[in-house]
Amino acid sequence: QVQLVESGGGLVQAGGSLRLSCAASGRTFSWNIMGWFRQPPGKEREFVATINWSSGRTYYPNSVKGRFTISRDNAKNTVYLQMNSLKPEDTAVYYCAASTRLGDFSTFAYQYDYWGQGTQVTVSS
Image (cartoon, rainbow, N blue to C red; front, side, top):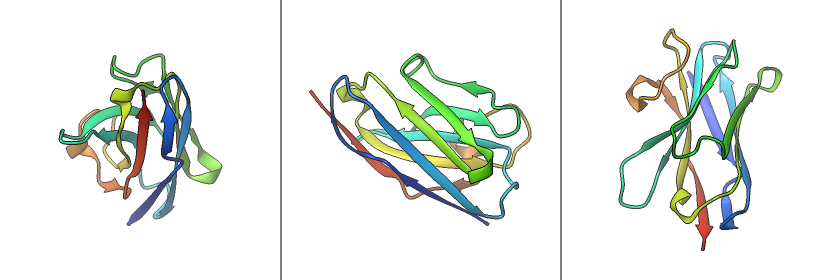
Protein backbone atom coordinates (compact mmCIF):
# COMPACT_ATOMS: atom_id res chain seq x y z
CA GLN A 1 0.00 0.00 0.00
CA VAL A 2 1.02 3.58 -0.67
CA GLN A 3 -0.25 6.54 1.31
CA LEU A 4 -0.33 10.00 -0.27
CA VAL A 5 -0.82 13.20 1.70
CA GLU A 6 -1.27 16.54 -0.07
CA SER A 7 -0.61 19.95 1.43
CA GLY A 8 -0.20 23.54 0.31
CA GLY A 9 -3.68 24.42 -0.87
CA GLY A 10 -5.40 27.65 0.08
CA LEU A 11 -6.92 30.90 -1.12
CA VAL A 12 -4.98 33.07 -3.55
CA GLN A 13 -5.80 36.01 -5.79
CA ALA A 14 -5.79 35.68 -9.55
CA GLY A 15 -2.25 35.98 -10.89
CA GLY A 16 -0.78 34.56 -7.71
CA SER A 17 1.11 31.34 -7.05
CA LEU A 18 0.82 28.27 -4.87
CA ARG A 19 2.96 25.17 -4.46
CA LEU A 20 1.30 21.89 -3.63
CA SER A 21 3.20 19.03 -2.07
CA CYS A 22 2.40 15.34 -1.97
CA ALA A 23 4.31 13.12 0.42
CA ALA A 24 4.29 9.40 -0.28
CA SER A 25 4.82 6.68 2.30
CA GLY A 26 4.32 2.96 2.65
CA ARG A 27 5.53 0.75 -0.18
CA THR A 28 8.00 3.25 -1.54
CA PHE A 29 9.51 2.61 -4.97
CA SER A 30 6.37 0.64 -5.97
CA TRP A 31 5.12 3.42 -8.23
CA ASN A 32 6.44 4.47 -11.62
CA ILE A 33 4.31 7.50 -12.38
CA MET A 34 2.94 10.31 -10.26
CA GLY A 35 0.25 12.74 -11.27
CA TRP A 36 -1.93 15.62 -10.23
CA PHE A 37 -5.62 15.85 -11.00
CA ARG A 38 -8.26 18.38 -10.02
CA GLN A 39 -12.01 18.46 -9.63
CA PRO A 40 -13.68 21.84 -10.04
CA PRO A 41 -17.04 22.40 -8.32
CA GLY A 42 -19.78 20.47 -10.09
CA LYS A 43 -17.42 19.03 -12.69
CA GLU A 44 -15.57 15.80 -13.32
CA ARG A 45 -12.01 15.13 -12.26
CA GLU A 46 -9.47 16.30 -14.84
CA PHE A 47 -5.80 15.71 -15.53
CA VAL A 48 -3.35 18.46 -14.54
CA ALA A 49 0.20 17.07 -14.71
CA THR A 50 2.18 13.86 -14.65
CA ILE A 51 5.81 12.87 -14.09
CA ASN A 52 7.78 9.70 -14.58
CA TRP A 53 9.44 8.95 -11.26
CA SER A 54 12.67 7.59 -12.75
CA SER A 55 13.27 9.81 -15.76
CA GLY A 56 11.56 12.96 -14.56
CA ARG A 57 9.78 13.32 -17.89
CA THR A 58 6.65 15.44 -17.57
CA TYR A 59 3.46 16.10 -19.48
CA TYR A 60 0.72 18.75 -19.14
CA PRO A 61 -2.58 19.57 -20.78
CA ASN A 62 -2.77 22.84 -22.71
CA SER A 63 -4.92 24.40 -19.97
CA VAL A 64 -1.97 24.57 -17.55
CA LYS A 65 1.10 24.26 -19.81
CA GLY A 66 3.52 27.10 -19.15
CA ARG A 67 1.88 27.96 -15.83
CA PHE A 68 2.16 24.75 -13.80
CA THR A 69 5.28 22.69 -13.15
CA ILE A 70 5.40 19.20 -11.67
CA SER A 71 8.60 18.01 -10.02
CA ARG A 72 9.74 15.32 -7.64
CA ASP A 73 12.25 14.80 -4.88
CA ASN A 74 13.20 11.14 -4.95
CA ALA A 75 14.99 11.29 -1.60
CA LYS A 76 11.91 12.68 0.13
CA ASN A 77 9.38 10.61 -1.86
CA THR A 78 7.58 13.86 -2.54
CA VAL A 79 6.04 15.31 -5.68
CA TYR A 80 5.29 19.00 -6.10
CA LEU A 81 3.02 21.12 -8.25
CA GLN A 82 4.14 24.70 -8.67
CA MET A 83 1.21 26.76 -9.90
CA ASN A 84 1.84 30.25 -11.26
CA SER A 85 -0.39 32.84 -12.92
CA LEU A 86 -3.40 31.26 -11.28
CA LYS A 87 -6.84 31.93 -12.72
CA PRO A 88 -10.30 31.65 -11.11
CA GLU A 89 -10.96 28.63 -13.34
CA ASP A 90 -8.11 26.83 -11.57
CA THR A 91 -10.31 26.66 -8.48
CA ALA A 92 -10.74 22.99 -7.58
CA VAL A 93 -9.85 20.23 -5.19
CA TYR A 94 -6.41 19.02 -6.25
CA TYR A 95 -5.48 15.36 -5.89
CA CYS A 96 -2.15 13.62 -5.99
CA ALA A 97 -2.02 10.10 -7.44
CA ALA A 98 0.47 7.30 -7.98
CA SER A 99 0.50 4.66 -10.69
CA THR A 100 2.35 1.36 -10.84
CA ARG A 101 1.80 0.92 -14.57
CA LEU A 102 4.76 0.80 -16.93
CA GLY A 103 5.29 3.63 -19.35
CA ASP A 104 6.45 7.23 -19.40
CA PHE A 105 3.35 8.77 -17.85
CA SER A 106 -0.43 8.61 -17.73
CA THR A 107 -3.16 11.19 -18.20
CA PHE A 108 -6.07 8.91 -17.27
CA ALA A 109 -7.37 8.75 -13.71
CA TYR A 110 -8.33 5.08 -13.99
CA GLN A 111 -4.67 4.16 -14.55
CA TYR A 112 -3.68 5.44 -11.11
CA ASP A 113 -3.71 3.03 -8.20
CA TYR A 114 -3.36 5.32 -5.18
CA TRP A 115 -4.89 8.69 -4.36
CA GLY A 116 -4.49 11.36 -1.75
CA GLN A 117 -7.36 12.95 0.13
CA GLY A 118 -7.22 16.19 -1.86
CA THR A 119 -6.44 19.79 -1.05
CA GLN A 120 -8.63 22.80 -1.87
CA VAL A 121 -7.28 25.55 -4.10
CA THR A 122 -9.42 28.65 -4.44
CA VAL A 123 -8.47 31.48 -6.80
CA SER A 124 -10.37 34.72 -6.33
CA SER A 125 -10.87 37.25 -9.13
